[in-house]
Length: 343
Ligand code: CP
Image (cartoon, rainbow, N blue to C red; front, side, top):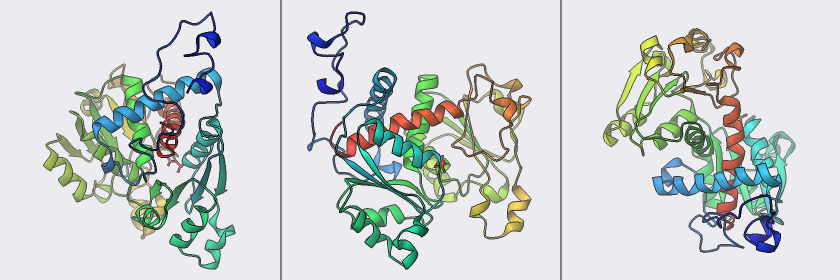
């Protein structure tokens, strides 16, 4: 790793203005074909233990330091990412591209599949088998639940799930948890309140599953039509995770909350537009909402937002949703380095 950290480790290259730093336990030299995540797919948060999370966040923290200190470095020089998006994306697509490029790698972007052979009827298995001829890792967003698992079944190279319909969005949940860690520094004993589209919101599904690894209290606020799926309610109950369910976000609930996780009501997920009309605009977080909140509470949102957090909240120091996007860069850098045997 010395070559990537030119001003650390090697005494001859250490800048005199900075104290010598310990060698990172997380970002080792060279390829690590025996590394635990080398060549693995990342399909679900269920793959991660709390020890795995510590490891991911350790690497992500190193990535943050490196980006802040040197910007771009050559850890993945020569590696290629195929970025295959069947659904729209700004953050996930751009941050994976930025992550690969910050690490010195390059990207085959297929962000508009209508201009690829998918438009001619090519199947997902054939598309991923094509892309892995040219790339070392595939990032896939698809509208169907289970699509990432299907792609991984056919691909020999690692597949990373960037959102499979209403199923999971594991890299978002990892970056969400990293955000909580960086902002609050603890998970133990915190209260997380999730609000909005808990039914179709894959980020909520993944984050709830990760949070149950910790001693946390969960609140879920949604209209009846958008309640958390029963399967996840049961998972939390079987795990013994304290969870409460509400239709309204009361001042008392806000006052007990450490993390307010707001989500968009996703118009594109509704089969019946009348159902969307019934629940759109159900909740709007405003400065008034935050009056009862703790000074150290954070407001998170996977974004994009379409009005559920008023822009007047943006200047409140508790508004963490823009910082959250930046944390996503570091987590995705860590994940790419891990599956490609560099961490
Ligand atoms: N949070 C998220 O997945 O955003 P995009 O849809 O813009 O990728």
